[in-house]
Image (tube, rainbow, N blue to C red; front, side, top):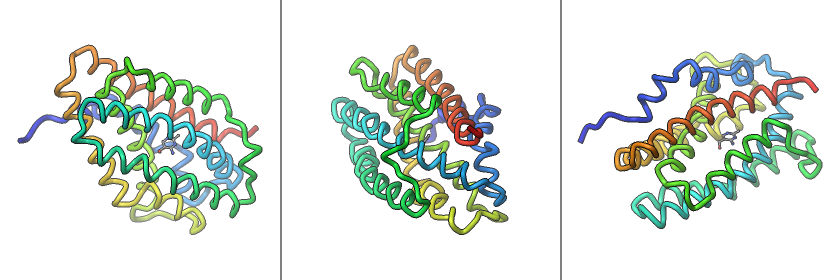
Amino acid sequence: GVEASTTAAWIERHQQMYERATRHPFTISIRDGTIDLSTFKRWLSQDYLFVREFVAFEASVLLKCCKQDSSDMEIILGGVASLSDELSWFKNEAAKWGIDLASVSPLKSNMEYHRFLRSFTEPEVIYAVAVTTFWIIETVYQDSFGFCIEEGNKTPPELLGTCQRWGSAEFKQYCQSLQRIADRSLANAPADAVKSAEEAFIRVLELEIGFWEMSSSQS
Ligand code: HMH
């Protein structure tokens, strides 16, 4: 049936922050072709480390899903499975840009994000909260990079592959599946869990803004 989407309401309620995360000067500069390539390389290196950490986070969401609501298993499992490809993609991309990933250390905002992700792997964190967090993390990238390949973009050709990875129609569908899962889980969750999920939603937006800022900063 037609049910109000809790997550869509949160995007509206926190729209300013959502826009700061998904229309950040970093991704806008990809779209308009003015991005500084050393900035892009810093983002790529840091995001490789993020995705390595994200593996454990996604695995923990999968585990919670299997324990509580196995109807979502295939979507979440698909996400976990695609991370193997994603890590190979990062290694390949890094090689193209002459980046030695072995010598990259996480910067402050990245470490902060790692700490946040780790806090969700505790078994006490309930599935609805974890899967909602998962959905918004993926959605920020989908919306940000999707915009870089929408009509009117001047994205440099060498960055199109990156934008396609998260901006593709396929990735958008995957995010929409996660959103349906999040909404359904939240509809069945106790009020305090819904509150925690909204707090995590806001925190992800802050961390994503911090991640773009970190990637953009000269140092
Ligand atoms: C920082 N957020 C960050 N990196 C990513 N790769 C994603 C979200 C999407 O997976």
